[in-house]
Image 1: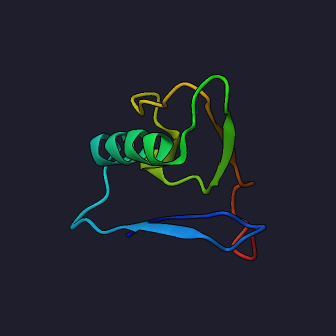
Image 2 (image 1 turned 135 degrees about the horizontal axis):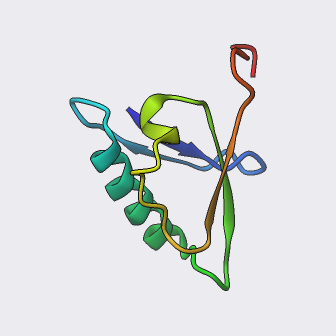
Amino acid sequence: MYCFVEPSSGESEWWLFDRVETQIMSLILEAFAQAQGIDQENPALLVLDRAGWHITNKLEIPPGLFLEFLPAYSPKL
């Protein structure tokens, strides 16, 4: 399950797939950016944990989407 939540409004978007991997994550990030109108003029910050498919240099990140990673071993966050 892939989920995006906007903290101030609680608005969420869910994506269900039968596995997690870098290629799928790249496609979901692209679809998310398009659906939310994220681009270089309308940037967004996405906070993620450090799952392997989040931190790989093979992940394709759409323009205007910036990733911030939680500290390692921070389950309470």
